[in-house]
Length: 486
Image (cartoon, rainbow, N blue to C red; front, side, top):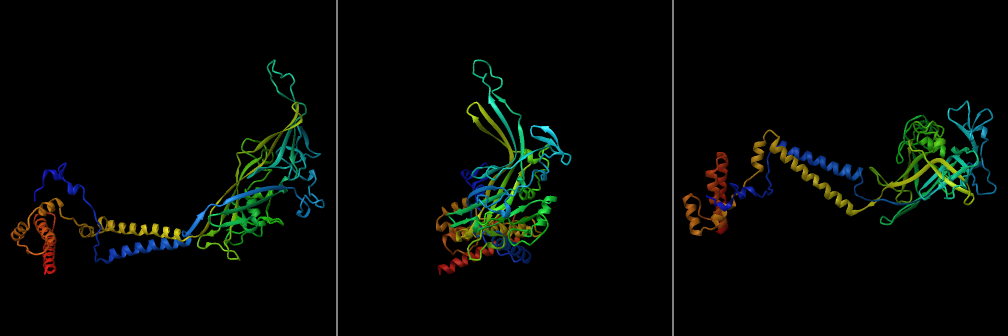
């Protein structure tokens, strides 16, 4: 049948340019292709159920908790007593037992320093401080002082503004550097709480269980894991171990705060205060200080186990401390203490271990909507699997040409259909007689029968078997129409 010019675009039939692809079901009786599809579906189903739902707990609704935190520092005491009690005694050792303190057989080097034969780094005079005097605290950070340099200064009276000022403050005494004695044995106490109103979860550190991650395998970390009886391979469902990496339990106070000595925290990072600082420093970490991120990761779920439950049947929240050092980033702060304002002051530079807390992690609870969303999203994989099998059949497998013929069908050109619709019933009957087709069926069936007859006769790409199939289909279509009319 001819086509009008208005039905062409750039020489192409507009019905071919703007074709609409509609899915249809074709049952291909080939066990190999069927087994391929079922194998794909089984693999996808296993991934959805086993990996996503059981392992990854994708049926849970997760939210980040809100965390409040405070840290305190305490000097060593006898029996771990509270230093605020009058009966509590401090447990400071003599300076001569501390290898970084100046002693009688060390050579004075000025400004409070000395050179001792047993230590490659410079020693300094030592000074006792308590927990309150040895730390500077903020809401989520704390500086633990390890070395202090002080300068007593007087304001230069010649800097009145009438002449250029070349030195505003004059040192009136030699600067004095001191190490904080036995700071390694000071204890860091961590108290924190988490909550999430949407999930209805609220816990304090007294109601949670925590672990310190020893994440490394150098000599100090191996020694720490080996010396801790509580060391395990994982924080949940872990086994006891004496190897690193490991997780160890923090010590706890009577108020169930988590307590670590500074020495233990340094060992967990594989460092020592008397170890070398950054490259080119020439000093120890005790002198230069160190920046450390204390990452606390909260969780109440575990792969393959869903929401963890306590003995009371309530969700059990756990957390892991992870100390992340920045060895190339020492830490120092400067403070001023005025002896006589504004003319006399003491300038203090304090070096130390700067702990900055970063809270992260998620808490989860069962949620039907999350489960439905996960299942709905996962079912997309089944559609993708069916598409993969379809394209393998059409373009990869050995019988791809046969599969392609079965899977892709081409509809009539509706430009021709529209022309046939303009015909009267009598004209359609005449066309059916010319083509020796049954003159029965509805008007739509008659138009399709005429089109199929012409398409079958004129198509050069269709095999003889395909032509016979179309002819048989046309007769069957008309006969079915005759039965419906009868």
